[in-house]
Structure formats: C-alpha cells, structure tokens
Amino acid sequence: MIDFSSSSVFKLSHIDPAEVRPQIEGLLLEGEVLLVAAKTIRDFVVFTDKRVIAVDVQGISGKKRDFTSLPYSKIQAFSVETAGTFDLDAELTLWFSGLGMVHFEFRGAFDVTYLAKLIGSKVL
Image 1 (cartoon, rainbow, N blue to C red):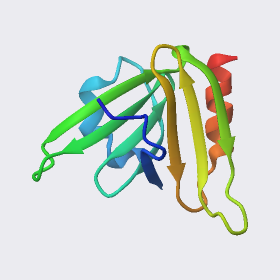
Image 2 (image 1 turned 30 degrees about the horizontal axis):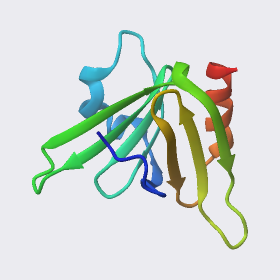
Image 3 (image 1 turned 60 degrees about the horizontal axis):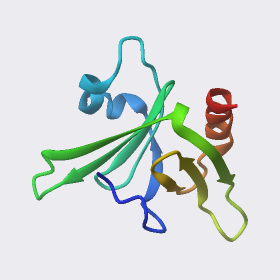
Image 4 (image 1 turned 90 degrees about the vertical axis):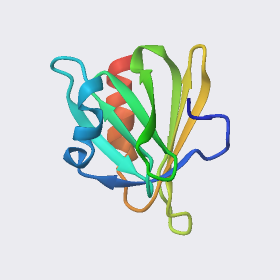
C-alpha cells in the first residue's frame, strides 16, 4: 500500500485517462467511468465516478504495481488549494475514515476545482 503519511505523496501532471485505462481495466466495476487521470514519472492516480485509484509502480521493470482503492464514501472531509502566482502547484487533501489524510500535489494548470465538485457531489 502507498504510504500516504508522507507530506507529499505525488507531484502529478494531468494526462488523458485513456493513457492509463489499460493498466486498471481489470479493477473497474461494470459501468465505472474514468473521469480524471494524473501521473508522475511512473506512478499515477485516477478519479472515477466511484473512487480514487492510486497506482504505485514498483521495481526496476515496473511490472509490479500496488493499486490502492479509495472510495468516495469513506471521505470525511476534503480541502483544495488552487495554484497561485508564485506557488504554481495545486493541492488536494482528503481525510478518509480508517486511513487518515491523503495528500496529492498537482503541477501546473490542473483544475482542482473540478475535483472538489466531483468529490463534493459524492460525499455531501
């Protein structure tokens, strides 16, 4: 499982969800829709209409992967921070029942307000 206790687990850049769909296809429920995807050099995270799936690519070859499923139904609170003039990164922090805080940092012009609306529609 990904260690979400570190101060910054990911520095993510937006990608087309179709780019990582083949890697998580087997995990998706029938009718589950990929909405947003973001990636570091190897690791990535996807936001579906039901949950967040964080993928930690491991090993030299990258064939070993850890998939962490974070259902929206377990979110107790969330916070977003948009990019500013000098701080160009946007941030999303989620507090999960039984897990604690999960923190994501997004590079550049990532629309975290869309994620806030998505998460709000699922937990409020």
